[in-house]
Length: 202
Image 1 (tube, helix red, strand yellow):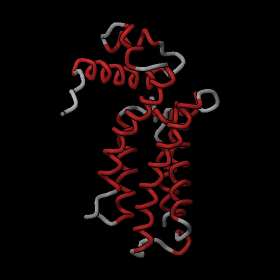
Image 2 (image 1 turned 45 degrees about the vertical axis):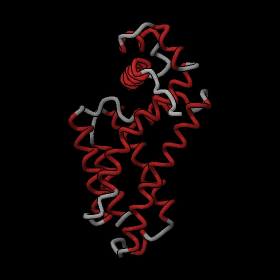
Image 3 (image 1 turned 90 degrees about the vertical axis):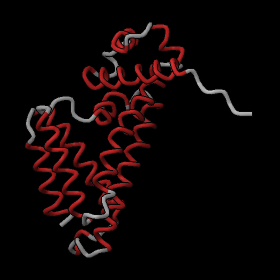
């Protein structure tokens, strides 16, 4: 016997709340954003929030998933493009990110980075979700770096463990995004990209 389909109205409400949470957390931060603000932005009754999420912390973890899944589309578009040499794929990804942040004036930054700073010491559920998603991000970078190594696109000094290189590249990039927000300048991103490809992935 086929399983009954879920209520489409419930699914729509849940999606509205996640979209609203993503926007509000990105603009104002987790602690400064109340459930009432999220419900108002989503144009749903406040009581609907707890019909779909057992706590604000559980909601925050799902917002991390929502944000990363959207960015994952871009990551896969650039890093899994087998028609482009692996090292060039990495170049293209970082170039696109710099163009994006330039267009937005260097504001908001990376939601995952923002939430890491705000919540990693206090909200274990969100911290764990962030760690898992950063691992996925690093794995995609690692696979691309491994392909660049295998096809001889990298010089000897860049033939260290691909996982270590991927972690360093991602950590450097996230740090540069934080500095970009403070300086309101795209220069930290350009510096990170240039050093990554001049000294790390040469």
